[in-house]
Image 1 (cartoon, rainbow, N blue to C red):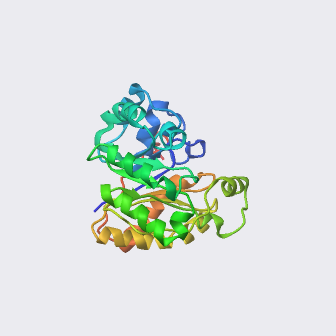
Image 2 (tube, helix red, strand yellow):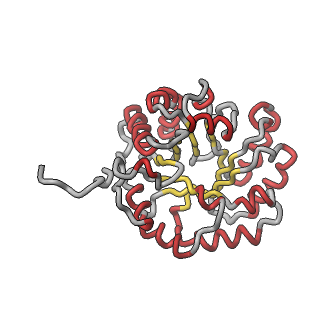
Image 3 (cartoon, one colour):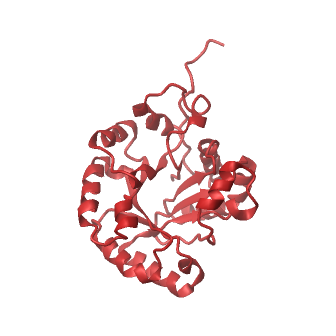
Length: 283
C-alpha cells in the first residue's frame, strides 16, 4: 500500500542546505527532491512546454513510480478555454511522452470564470484526450461548490471519462487573518471556496495549503489524514500535495503528513530515506 505525497515544486532556496544539499546542479535537483517525496506538481508546464532535453533529465532523475501532476499549458486552459485544443495538446503530449507512467495525470486547472455554461467545452475536451491518460480537473467557479445541480452535472461530465475532480483546499489558509507577507499575498491570489473531499475515482488528488506556521498547518490537516486513510483502506491510490504560503517547510511537512497517515494505516509503505544534505563526517 502506497501513498504519494509532494510539494508545489522540487527546487526552493529555503530547502538548500537544510533538507537538500546546498550545491546542486539544476539537473540533479529533482533527484534529490525525489528522495524526500514521491510526487510533485508540474506547475512550470503551465507557462511553457518543456524541451525534449528537459524531459529526458526528469526521466533520468526519477523512478517510474514517481508521480508528476503535469499542468496543461495556459494556451489550452486559459487562452483557448479548451476550444480547438488538438494542435497544442498533441504537441504537449508528444514532448512529455518519454515520462511514461510518471505522468500520473494531466492537471486541467481552469480559470475561475470557467463556469456551468462551459461544461460542454470541458466534456468535449476530455473526450479528446487519449484513452489511458488520466485527467484531474480543478475548477474554481463558485457555482460548482454552492449549487448542487452544477456539482452533480460536473461530476457527471468527469465520471463519463473517469476523470477526477482535483481538490484545492484553502480553508486552513483563510481560517484566520494573515500573519506574514507570504500569507497576505496568498490571501489575495488563492481561491476561497468550500472544502470538497469526495473522490470520484481510484486516484483522488488533493492540493492542501496551510499556514506558514507548521503547527497550524499540521493541526488543520487532520480532516485529510482521516480522509486519506479511508481512501487507502478502500483500495484507492491518493496523491496529496502540501503547500504553505512561503513553502519554506513544505518539504518536511509533506513527509510529516505521510507519517500521520501511517499512524492510522500502519501497513502503509514507508517513504525512502532522504539524501544527506552534506558529505558524511567522522564525528
